[in-house]
Length: 220
Image 1: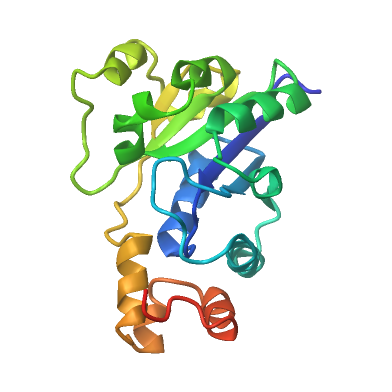
Image 2: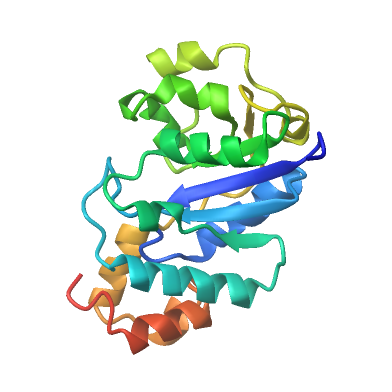
């Protein structure tokens, strides 16, 4: 394996995947100089309510979004779906580290809101031994408080372009506009009967097609 192998990993429920997810994926790829970004949909999110769409539907929506984006650097990684049970990032990153070797730069893409609560995650301190973090702004989240996470992150911050030089243990902020709408709010809009023209400003036509074919989010 080449020493400069750099892979970004973007996990989440993707319920549904929206344009904000794709914007964050594109920013992570470009700013971190990653050669590949893997979307990693969870089976059961440990820190959120149960997903509204089942695993098969979320995989289908993500695949449609990836195909429409037409970027060969995007991949769909189904390891957490196949594993079932709570989807622990520590376990997935451990598997990826074993597969890609010790010199690869693994970049875990995350939002500031999730980073704020990282100490609630399963074996969270091990994440810094397994990969780096590329962090996107979220509405209402700008800085970490004096939590154990803030202390763990002290002296780890580098520029996004420098993450590729670190196999693990570094953190960088991504420079991008905040996406104002969450998947939860998007589901509520769809349940309320928002028209397709407005929806396609928030989700891709390919994703909307899957939603309609599978009658998703009615009464969400």
